[in-house]
Amino acid sequence: MSQPPSPPPLSPALRERLFRQVKTAPAETRSRYVRRTAIALLLGLVVSFALFALLGGVRIGERAPAYVLALLGSVLVLEGAFGALALRRRTAAAAPTRNFVVAALSLPIGWALVTGVTLLLWPDGGGSDHAPRHDLMCGALSVSMGLPPLFASIYARRASVFVAPAWVGAALGATWMTFGTALMTFACACATSMHMVLGHVLPAAIAGAVLGTVLGQRYLSFRAQTNARPTP
Amino acid sequence: MARYAAGEDGALVTVYDAVAPRIYAYVLRRLGDVGLAEDVLQKTFLHMHRARGSFVPGALVAPWAFSIAKRVLIDAARARTRQRSRFVSDDEGDLTSSAASGEADAESFVAARELGERASALLQTMPQNQREAFLLMRVDGLSVVEAAEVLGTTVSAVKLRAHRAYKALADALGDFHPGARGEEEEP
Image 1 (cartoon, rainbow over the protein chains, first blue to last red):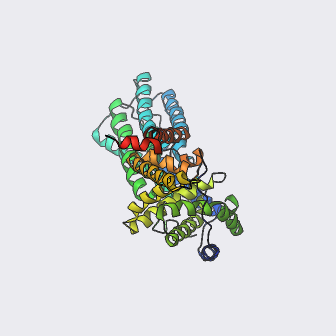
Image 2 (image 1 turned 30 degrees about the vertical axis):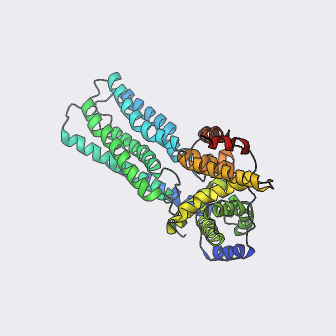
Image 3 (image 1 turned 90 degrees about the horizontal axis):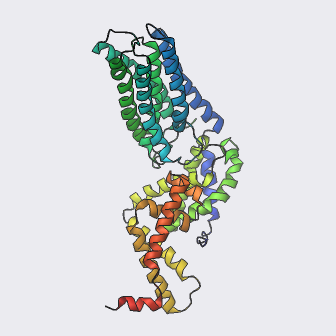
């Protein structure tokens, strides 16, 4: 491959003008940015755990402790493997879109598989009082517990995604909705298969995909025309 | 860039000297207007300045700067709707001038120009991902890793796209030389 054509010389006046303009434009430093985004995420998690605590924290009920432990372990593995793909930033430009697609699809599918397998292994999970009202409540609470950290993640990355913002949003949505529904599963002692599907798997999957995609497309996409970044 | 992101304003000089000429060449090649290219470069650096806190320490600076420049460029091109046709002719101009470098006589120049025109026309018919990979690496001088970050894909995908673009160009232009040109035109 031959070398590209050499760039034309830059005008010294442009350099001077730019440096003068930069001096007057406020910009956040890395440490302030890290602090601000960490505080936002921490607040999001605090709200989720506060809601979880208000619901009574972990309730074993009639469920086998091993079942609850299996759920916990599976969620940690899922989030560690796929949530990290969505949350970890190793490049200032664009990470491969494939990572976000994998995270957005694997988390809800993985959570559905975990739910199915654990229900097969512990069929007498407990909680026979299955009612549509109960499904709706668990679904709403699952989404409510996933929303605060999702909003925090969107806030931290807003207007900074160059490629496939909808997929990045969907991956973040899947990550935090899986987290939210997992918390709700520990707080809900009912483990009938129908309730698990309608109250704990589907709402999180749908909300994660829809909210993540919409918020991602709306808020994550880099926009050159606007002052995309906040001033400190 | 890491020092600049940490708040050391003086480090902007180093970033500017390292990145600005490449960004300027990239923008100028597509816009063909020095004034507009300088404006886009200035806006790109202002965006980089405002977003410096979000720069990931240890990451490559060029793909980040190119990604920002690409968005600013798109906005500038939208502002000038006729820019699209200029984009085509600029690429054409590059390829033509590259192909024509070192050629002194008029016949060779004409042949090289025609080669450039055919290459540019072919580039426009290629899938966008192949064209972008080709232009970023071949014309803008980005490495495979840098191009992958700008395009948000993997290194192997960029290699594959660029290879397909090279192959399509080679297949289409392989038989093109002044001697064969006349034969081609015969019925």
